Length: 165
Ligand SMILES: [Zn+2]
Ligand SMILES: [Zn+2]
Ligand SMILES: [Zn+2]
Image 1 (cartoon, helix red, strand yellow):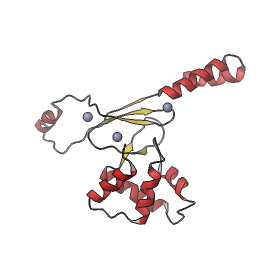
Image 2 (image 1 turned 30 degrees about the horizontal axis):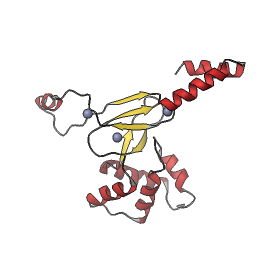
Image 3 (image 1 turned 180 degrees about the vertical axis):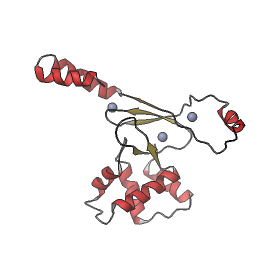
């Protein structure tokens, strides 16, 4: 995951000017360890940066995605969101409960995929491969809730709804 300094460097490397607004946004990004939405970012920033409207945030985030500073994440359930990016080819592990995302620098796609794609007449391709699951800390929270739950009707309800996950 990029640090603030690496994000700044990446932006400058692409010849994009780091305006005070962009700089303020970069500094806030580091406070999101997992998936966030434009609304989450706006909420965090509106007190100190009331001038930053939703349209500016969307434009800046779009720009950061193109530069690789942010990555757009698709989720099976719920809204798509963004995460702070990482350089180099990689894939993701996503917790469907808390939204934590880990970049994994392992590619499970067959090594000759580029050659096969070329044979189909395609070039400049990208591929995505994300695994969704439940992270260790969310499973531990769930397990301890379930243990408490077996003692009362309230917990039983929580336990049964979690079964469906
Ligand atoms: Zn989790
Ligand atoms: Zn990533
Ligand atoms: Zn890959």
